[in-house]
Amino acid sequence: MTAARFAGSQDLHDFVTAYAEAHPDDVLDIAEHVPDSQDAAALVWKLAAAGRHEMLRFRDIAGFPFDVVTNVFACRRRIVRILGADPGRDDLHAVFQARARNLIEPVEVGEGPVLDRVSEGDGIDLTDLPLLTHFETDRAPYITSGIMVVEGEDGAAGNLSYHRAMVHSPTELAVSLHSRGDIWRMLGAAAERGRPLRAAMVLGGHPLFMLAASSRVPMGVDERHVAGGLFGAPLEVVRSPAYGVRVPACSDFLFEGEIDTEARVEEGPFGEFTGYSSDRSTNSLFRVEAMSSRRDPMLLDVAGGNSAEHLNLGRIPRESEMAEKLKERFPEVTGVHYPNSGVHLHCYVKLRRSRAGQARQVMLGLLGWDPYLKTVVAVDDDIDITDDAEVLWALAAHFQPAEDLFVVDGLPGSPLDPSSSPEGTTSRLALDATRGPGFSGVRIGFSQESLDRAARLVADRLPLRRERKV
Image (cartoon, rainbow, N blue to C red; front, side):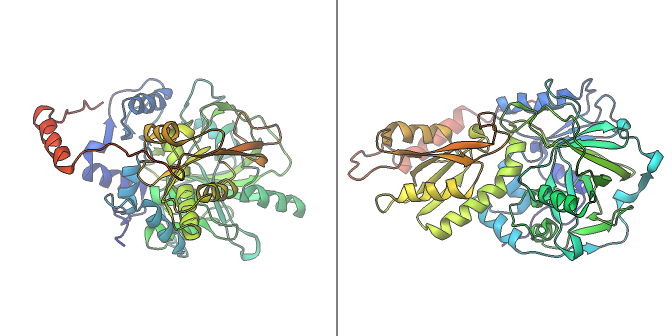
């Protein structure tokens, strides 16, 4: 396996520079003055509508004394490059899983850029921190790339996870903790001990560290060790000023303090992955006792809502885990894909069908393993599951509603799904769009020689258009 190509440095700044030099056509460097921070997310949407997903670097957003980088994870090809996977082999899932399982313990480096400027007590004023407004329906400007770092008690494994956050007061953040996540359970354990939960939040991590924070691992596995596996070297960490939490040395911003186990504050609505504005939240309060940053920070933003970036960041680890589980149990499975159109709630799986009922068994496995899924579509191995149109064609040509679907009701779903019950339960649907026994259709096609000649004719008459850079 080749090394992750951009893992030589764990510094986000070095990554942005190196990637722009290696792939200048995949980065838009925007020097023009941007009068409203919401324009950054609007540009992400406009580019996506044109089929473009470049990484964006803004040099001059009103009110921001530093650069803003966003849309890093919007393109799967870019993620393949970052991981050092082979774009010709479709091995993104296998490479991610192999690296993520190679757990490497972090190494303390003593000093790091994130501790360049430290403020404590009365020196903290979060209202001075420029943040992006993503959607006009958002309650406030939001932190979308914040990774919470919580250390386990008595040497237990720590935990990393993403949590949206907005400024509540000069020294407090209102955050939404996932009510089924590990940090929520750690908060409950802290409440039983009668004290708040110490935590740190970092902004501005290398993309491999960010992927590690979204990895799907059992409680008891520390995602900082997963980051080491993705880098192929120990994650370089420093101790936070107040409580000594081990955080990436090259982060841009660090907020440290305690999560109150009882206080509830207003938080949301915010544009979530479903494409809807959501005020479903744990309404938790994070009291910041120390904050620090590097001297030359940049703000790393994750485009919110149902952007390709937001979906990919959570989806690549989820797809990788599901692909591994399914292929281990069902060798006939050849691919798994969560389409943008289905946010995190739909999945396509393709397989070499060998016996009756096999597709149903595979779909039952998916629906049981992934609590977010509401709909699974099974197709044959010759269908491109990254193309919605191909999957919809398979449904049109192969699927019989009276015979090829089943529904499972009353299961836990995503609490952010606006169609779920007040208790967060949902129904789940499986659609078998594989060719059934006795299917007699023969798919149309062309000889390879004709396709090659047609490609040459197209290349001669339709030269590649040079897209205008913003």
